[in-house]
Every structure is written in structure tokens, then in C-alpha cells.
Image (cartoon, rainbow, N blue to C red):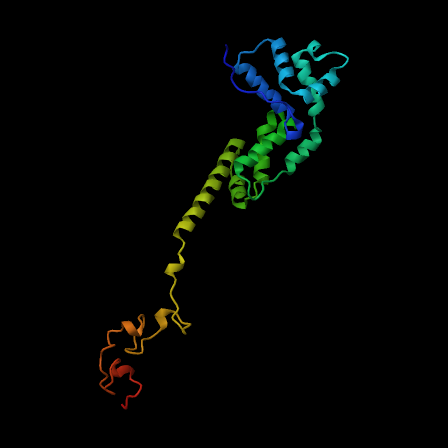
Length: 240
């Protein structure tokens, strides 16, 4: 028994299935399984598309039966029904007004532009149209300045520069996050004190940058008042 490569599901518009993409996948199925006979291709289409799609097909080709129509014409009939050609002007309007969204990657934006260009009939000018739309719609002033400064700018170069900037921006944010100071590195504020530690003077010796319990002179005896715990220079009861 021959091994079959791939799987063909039913075509179901309720699940958001696209007829053109469905046929494209079916054509790849034919290639993978060496199905070259058009009669057999027609049978695969009819047996795989599902009951609802077959009913639509049968109504569209009536009074003929689907088995009396060639595979090519069956596909064309269904394509015209499910995917009527959009207006070229309307599609070009969508293409020329499409801008990159804030959370959209450059690659995703370009892919969307290519999809929108499918029915624009740009022909040999497609790369130029993609270049212009990418420059105008990328929503990155720094990238736009860089691109506008380029001489003989191509779509390929535009795409490469935009991708490089996107990657550099992402790397810079990661570096900034990795080197940002944590809360542990902030200068502590002592109880009942609003000044940073560097400006607080120890009452035992008059020097900054340490607390009184850590002072070297906490065991010293004042030569002025003869009390323990500070030196004469900061003695509050000194008589000289």
C-alpha cells in the first residue's frame, strides 16, 4: 500500500478557511504524492472538500455535475465564488495607508505589505513600492533619517537596515536592564534622618560616613568632661 504524505482537511468557511490557501495546500499535496492526473486531482478535491463545500460546488456548476467539469474549472469556479477579485484601487489604498503598529516587528510588517500587494498589480515595480511603503510606514524617525540619506536605496537594503535597527534597539534595552542599579545600591536613610549618609556627622567624633555605634571613639573618654563615648572636639559641655 502506497504511503500518503500530508493530510487534507475539509474546507470550512466557518473556521475561517481561505479557499486560495486551501487549493495551494492541495496542490502541494499532489506534488508530494505524485498525483499528476487531472481526473484523479478532481476526485481528490471532491472527496476532501467536505459536504458543505461540495454542495456549494454542485450548485455553482449546475446543471452540470462536478464530475463533468475539469479540475481546473472547478477550482476557478469556487475561487470566483469565495474570493472575488478585489478592487485594484481599493487594495492599493490599503497598501499605501498601511503603517507599522507599535508592537509589530519589521518582518511582520513587511509580510503584511506583501499580502496587501497581491491584488495591486504592481508588476515589476513591486520592490519599489515595498521600499517606499516601508520607509514611510515604519514609524521610526531615526530609521527614516538613515534610509533617506542612502543613495540608490533598494527594498533589500531598506529591509536590512530596518531589521538591524530593530535588533540594535532590542539589544540596547537588554543591556540597560542588565546594568541598571538595583534597590540594594541606593544610599540608605537612617531613622529620623532625611539627609544621605555621606552628610551625617557622628556625634562621637564629628566625622561623616559612619554611625555612632561603629565609631572608633565610642570607648574614648572625653578630656573635657571626662565622660566616655566621645572626644573633646565635639563635647557639648566643653568650657574652653
